[in-house]
Length: 237
Ligand code: MN
Image (cartoon, rainbow, N blue to C red; front, side):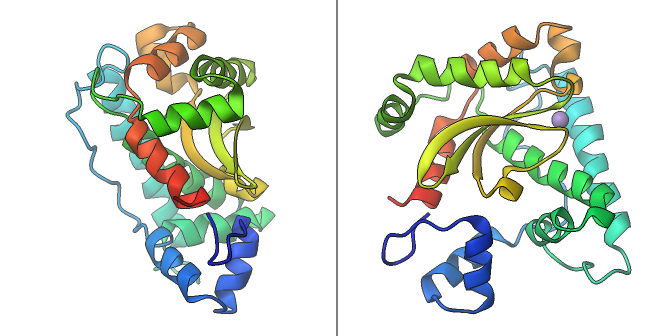
């Protein structure tokens, strides 16, 4: 995203500026970004809307049990601490900087990561890629297919559990992966799309075929309008 004079900020720089209340426009963005309550969000589609790429059974477990548990654990861990009442983003930020809060970070970051994960999907056949996003992928990766290939490669190469991300980094799009539940903010990058490569994301539907799962997600169920909306938020219109 850009300040009024067009300079991109890292998340930490942004917070530094926010804390000093130096720029009204940035403050408004904070109001928009940093307010997610500690409540499991509703799914934006029916539980069978992503099938067969992500089955209803997988959503029952992945959303209904895993995502819910990340929220439940986060709520339990902040109760009675100075972070009680803070937004999810504030908890991710604070716990990510303090090694003694690793368990809280893991759960809060995973709660946030899965909020993005479910919101970035659309029912099979509904997610048409806007021309503007195609152009951005061409500029940053060579082609849409090259972007998808890079995402899949990052996801397949991630040993064990983690995520492959499309991020805005220094005003440009990039792809990389993180281990376990880590969120790209701690690397100064802004996540706009994430592929969950934990086995709970695909094993019921694809067993060991992680690569095939990732390819089908990218080809069939992404809400590209939403991805572009997030990119615009961080890069500017
Ligand atoms: Mn997951």
